[in-house]
Length: 178
Picture 1: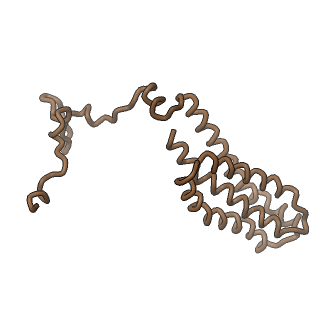
Picture 2: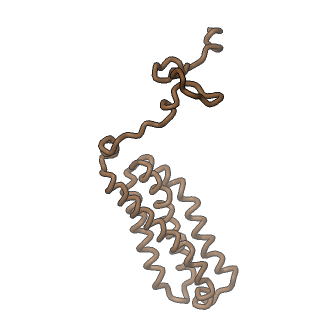
Picture 3: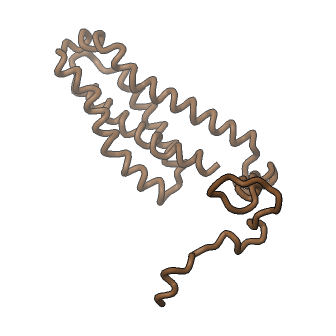
């Protein structure tokens, strides 16, 4: 048992492909064949067999997810750009207008780990699509809030945080699965 502590776990010389090639220059501290250090990249057929998707379809999915992410960020920062107009429309001060982003980021921050947990256990595609639909509907609904109901704007911004948390948490894992 004591000898197992001093023995190497893996030896690079165990694999015949990793043995040094005579006459090949080596960098200090490197061992083995230089070509063995290059990662093996599967061909296009191998990639399609692994993911089940063609490279073109994978690229399209990534492009759509990037576009939705762009819309996410545009929605997130649009409020800051029109904040003076919002203050005037709802007749509120700076402290109340600060709540708009606070409510959004608080719901986003609390629910992002929840959607991460759910994304590991349930179908990510359905969770993400449901979150996008929810986010879109709540954003659309917030456009029709009358000036007397500022609390309703705060509620909708909190609900927008729910939809954005679902997308921002799950979309990167979908890209990783491609």
